[in-house]
Length: 243
Image (tube, rainbow, N blue to C red; front, side, top):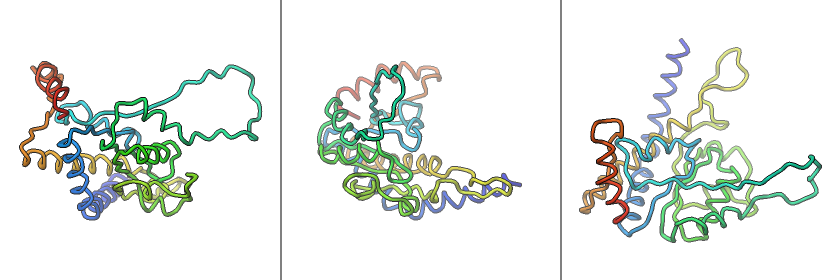
């Protein structure tokens, strides 16, 4: 069955992530813990199609992860015309977003682009580093090796960040060939990124505990008493200490 083939491929992916990324997982966990100990904030920005929502403000997740995203709304009601002669690049827009945010130098930002060349992600990482922010990138090194950079510096994402978490996805993302279907099937990066995030977080939690810091872990809001606990214990403590 295709299901069995998928499970086999999934096991291979998970094993590859565990074995090849163990050192980076530990390094990332220590970076998270050190940032928190120094009074910094930790932000997750659209990790692999927003898989960060598996950790942010949910039962069993740490309070110290916060979203970072930005956007711009532009009214466009006029007739459509050719604008190919104009410079419409967005490079530098992330700089404005960072200045309008509550980030400070020394904070930690995690970003994601499976290919390592997504325009908005590369722009954000580049500007964040200029701002003095630590950056961890989730991406596929195999995918990045198969594509050209788009940033004016000529660099890809992995060349401008502090640490790369390789989600081990194949080039073009999908893991399997299915007879009769032209495109490959089954995206790899989301599953791998979720495993990486929880693994890094586990190292961070352990490190903080070893250093005498007990980070706030949220209870499920739908379990009796969970929402009250989060609102009266976890959130006020985070507002005061950042963990």
